[in-house]
Length: 284
Length: 292
Ligand SMILES: Nc1ncnc2c1ncn2[C@@H]1O[C@H](COP(=O)(O)OP(=O)(O)OP(=O)(O)O)[C@@H](O)[C@H]1O
Ligand SMILES: [Mg+2]
Image (tube, rainbow over all chains, first blue to last red; front, side):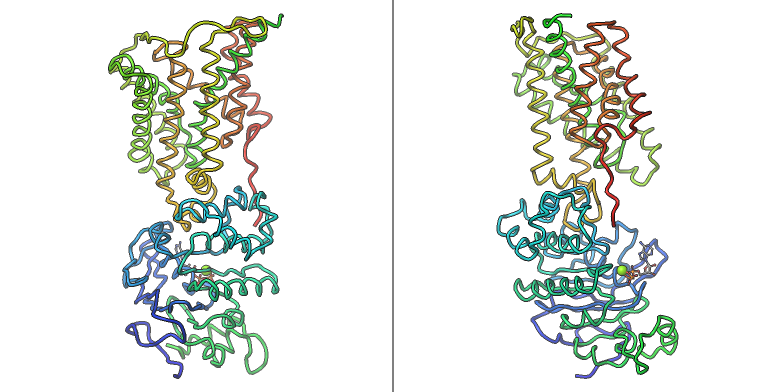
């Protein structure tokens, strides 16, 4: 299978996932408008197969976060709405379902910027994560503490005082407490040192492998993301401009040049180059 | 000054303080979860007192049933006020929301006067009369019981916040609404719950107060003392509410007993001004954690 160029309105079902089962999540031609005027997504179609990790890549302002907010139902809190297209999760139309109901169905989101409950203890943050399942069960807590042993000693500490890396672990653990079948993470590596970034992606891979959780992750660091992901999507200006298996994307010359920083001159390209590149509309 | 007066004043002060803390608890709950300053908390207290009076005296229900009736009415009141008065105001400036709760207070007070008139109503005592002797002081049993009941209810509320699933959800929403939503915790439901619980805590305070005084429109003025209590304790601290209530209750009783009952009435407000000048976030106001 070769990498396809695709237009924004490509009909769904035109590709199969690289591994795993049927798509659990299926976005079809999603269009999102903020404040009734800002068109942030212009027909985004994405499929994530059960038990796989999908990576969503792209420059700032491409619409990556908006895509995850559309899936988790957070748009109304930011005066955004899905104006066209639909989202199916486990063969259910969830396009206009309210956010809490989606969590109960098994969709969890770790927002950009971590968003721990600063004034709550680590233990209470985890308890809040278990909200849709009633109270936090012993097994779920044990599992989280097994994944993130650092959190054990910090249980009684207010989460706001944790370091960035600890907060990121807490946020992932908190999401695990809801036992999601689809876990979405918005830039989990933001502001973390390189070794911590590797750790975070290690946790994500482990979650996926051991618990069978399907993952959709946004990442600026394409190299890191494509190492653990099975499939990747590249977004620009509200559209998916490129998609394929992680291996295909890693070897794609365009991705290499603009996202992996492996241009022919051996130096990382700046976004100015990306802009120039976009003008050629090579991918569209 | 002798031990006897001291004991008496302390018990009276603690009882007043515990009831004040209960009344103020509702205020703090609403502020913590929704950032709304509720000027109608005194009216919630009034409605609580009258609802119990109606159930207990007018309908002749047994005490426990009358209390349950009061709780149901309080919950309904809280939910309705949140749904139809506060929710449409989401996004409005803080000052407009305050003005609306001031208006709401006037409306609620007016309605109660329409129904029950302005005359004080006599209510047969629920708490047993009689006295007990403690440290040589003869203390009215009902004051002691008010203290006990208020303390038990306060502890129950505190445990609810610390431990229960909904308590955690309320604190989570107060901390970060959007993040709470990603856990499936709906802010709307939490807001409704805060208002309902505020009305219930006011009900308990109102009933206790009515039992040791009388059922009159003056119950509202007790509600005014909520402000010194919460300013003293810190607007968003449950523990602060309790300490604030006790400080206000005790200082009022001591000033009244040792100096002048008239002057005692303005002591809480003097404290309020002093606290605003030296420690505007109160004794226990939350230290905002600002690290990113
Ligand atoms: N709440 C909002 N109101 C109005 N416009 C918004 C809002 N949120 C995002 N946008 C706009 O939608 C577009 C996509 O934003 P989005 O946050 O989804 O980008 P992103 O790909 O996540 O970028 P980044 O990598 O910087 O996080 C941007 O042009 C942004 O300005
Ligand atoms: Mg983003």
